[in-house]
Image (cartoon, rainbow, N blue to C red; front, side, top):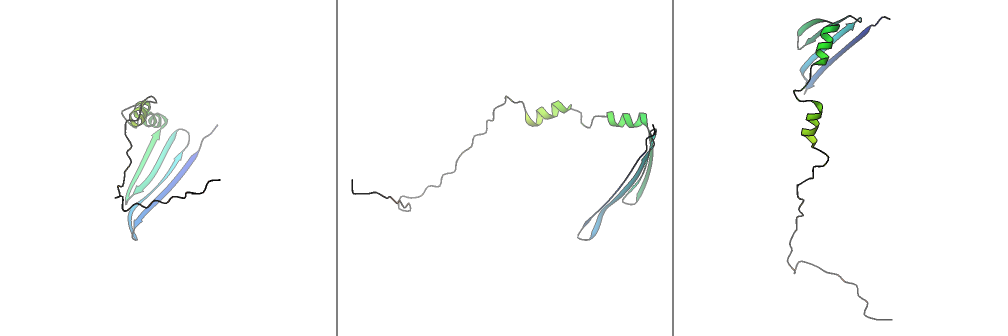
Length: 109
């Protein structure tokens, strides 16, 4: 079974017609070696990675805390109760400013 993966991409960002970022890459993976060519803001790069290097990169944690620790830190446990009190704002008006309208029937049947 032979494997061949090729990818490429480019991005150009501008603000008010002025280019602020310009980058592109081209890569080829033959099942054993990943070859990556790219440039970013005029600087060219080339890299070759074997399967062991790819595995090492993919196994590196992106954060020092585990995923579970980050979720618990961000969202807490399910048993945690919210302690924030909601308050209503009351606009006080003087009695003379209030208008009351009542519909009463004065006749009884």
